[in-house]
Length: 302
Image (cartoon, rainbow, N blue to C red; front, side):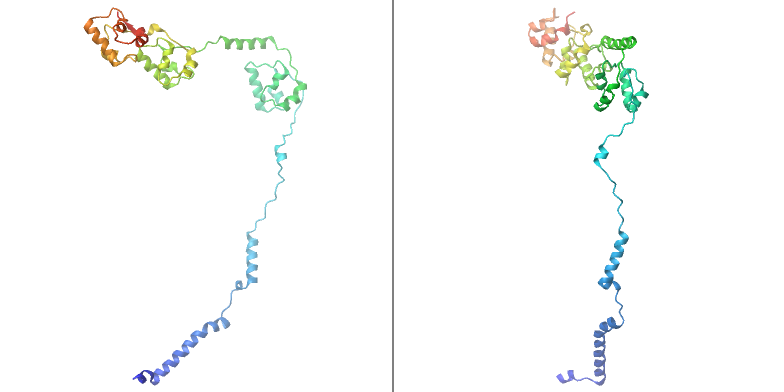
């Protein structure tokens, strides 16, 4: 049976020969094509590749800008000052002449504004105290400074300006009549403090003394010391509480009385009758002595 598998007809033998020939041609074709038909790229050669690479490198190269001869010493060196030197009086020299001496327009105006506000140069050293006059400028101008006697009119203007400062009275605000707009005029008292002061004053019925400001929330001793000279208190403006007429709801709102103390005062009055004097509330132990000392200026029985 195996012979049948190994025997081929004439057509089958022809087909096998043709297939073998095609396989051989397919195997040999790449080598034949590379030798006779394929043109290799010039870049495949290392020499040509180096030439092309150097060409593109030359196109991308940008010639560096020439470096400037920069010098820190030259940059930091002071500018050469071109100016005229002449004898001058710093009390009377004009802005134009100050610029001739080497001052800038701004520096000259600073000196002029100082004189307009009453400043006077009495000695040569006074001119050096101006912040626009540095030591090198003063040394250069010192031989040319000549201060003439100050005219009487200028002396009078200076003395008058000093006198006006002395006569000017400090700001003084009365606590029991001031509103928030007036209170904020005091240095250190902003809108928040002003509102708190007015609100606490309304609860108290008015301030009896300055120290009560320390009871305002957030107002410390340091701030009180800074504003004390700007405030005054008129105790005649304090609203008093009539112990024989006040209701419990009104009495308990006072910052110095607790709810229990307010109830005790009203209950005692209903049981014992009207008070003849304010100190009866402490004699009958309706309030303690510390509380009475704080609130006694707000109480009346009339």
